[in-house]
Image (cartoon, rainbow, N blue to C red; front, side, top):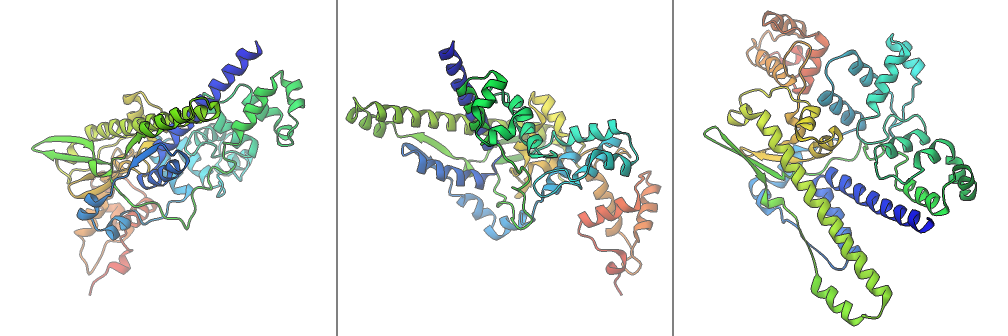
Length: 425
């Protein structure tokens, strides 16, 4: 029985490592992935990585232009609000989730009590608790936790391969685990020594500060596209961009030579086996990343077909969960896929999440509303530019009802100054 439990635990740990690597690689922008692979080559002498030179991209787009495409800084707040906009409809709970996001610290911890939040928003405890549940389902895993214990548990709950006993130990024995009182935990939980150790090793892989990866002074990576979209007479084609594809291979000849040299060296043979399995795990993770990236892009293009046929057409409303349902993937998988990934179309580079837009309460996509505001301002009398209230009134004549605050937000998003700064004499 003990051997069976140990074997099962070992398999579970390996599955967990593989699952974590797949999620990590799926979420990585291209430049981060290239950095990660450089480290992998140092760790595995048999791994060969053919890195794209990116010369094909830089010849079409100067490197300073590529940098400018994504030179803004993305905070944790911006990242979460984007997810909310792409996954939630305009319902009261959405507003509550946004309120809670404004009360997160830089590490992703919630800094306001639910009682105080409910009172400030004028809602009951059930609604604010539901909002917290929605917040805690966003990326990165663990965000919205109110303590280290909750932050770690939120991450473990999303991982189907977490070792047996993880949640029980996090819920009831975290202090003992921190003090390495494994024997005490064994007696309290009935777990074996190897199972407790497996949980300890697993928890060390979790992040105590899930929001720390978003810092205000760290710009995101260059906007190198990985997918190419081309339109020709109403037909739209989607494919992975060859200029940015990575080729992974394993030096089997070198491995065979070492294997023959150390034929009776058990330690060497085990090392060779471990390195070959590490390569297979990495190759599988990267292959699945590319397949998912292509599938998600194809789903986006199919929904936004009118835009790709005629870029003057506004984007239609599209939510992350709609693509998730279509592809039978989780919304978190779609979020990981679209964030920091880019496509090339008509000599322009677009982040995939650009094509997701939610339908507002007035029945228009956000993209269409931005276009409506911009069109009004472009057509205004430059000596007597439209005030924000005048824009609200002009939109109402088109049966579009927006508040002044929303008009200001959209104007800022379009980098259009206030009326008094637009006046020309």
